[in-house]
Image (cartoon, rainbow, N blue to C red; front, side, top):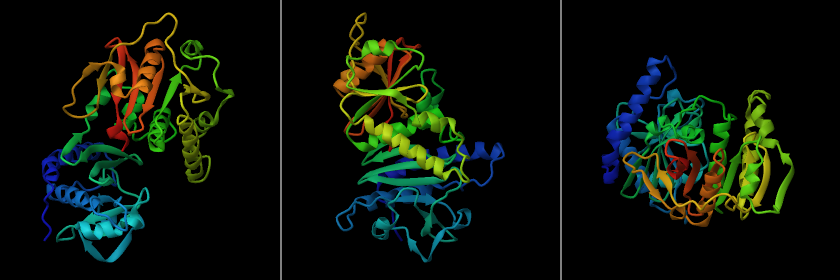
Length: 377
């Protein structure tokens, strides 16, 4: 019998269980059907423990990338079932990893009157399914499936525990893109603007070069006062592919898959522009105006000195710091841009994976820096 030894698994299990039980209770009360089963403490602790130790193993020179889902095969459409279920243990999971490391493939874990076992693989999960994903060696992300996308619940790295504070979505300064990351538009279509901004953020982070995306009002030209002229890469006319796809319904083809594929490629194309040195400018109609632009303070402005910094993590403090402390010149220039252009939003990806959303706070009368990398893993 396998015994858990990763102490973080036991420490976080109760908080994770409380989260899933609460969401499932609300969903049942609202009449939702086809809901995932609530995990118990033993399942949560064992799945986290096994995922952690599997992540530290090496198979043919590679670290395993797996996703475990607590679900019965009877609740999964077209499950791939093993004739002989595997024991929930790091060694067989690490050996299976090359077959299931692609996105949207989950190893199903269930107990059928006995110990937890891996019964096979699943691609489509019921709502509010408990998922533990190995993001890197020693780095785990607890997720829940909601509205066709996955919402991060907790991030575990070594002995560090970060539990997402979903109540941050109710804060008056919370931007729509952060609300979407926290799951508060989970029932919305993938082409709604906040969801597209989330996809842009994830794509910017994944290319690994770092970058800045500035979203500005379409009916204003004052943003050019904060940009060094001449612009090296001006897009004329404004590039409309994202805008056209957002306006186009996702049922324009039979199952929406073609539309979603086009949207994904369009998002990656725009995010790719942010890898060029300088910022990419996108208006709030989702048309690309320029990229590789250099930011400067407005002639009538003063240099920004401090920003308010928060992270949507339980127990996280609110602090005020110089924006350069967040990551250097890229963060400083983005904060200055938002300070001068207060209807703008800036998304900044660091090469090390950190991600910040800058937005003007009417409450604080300061630029608010939202640290969201824990939500993008």
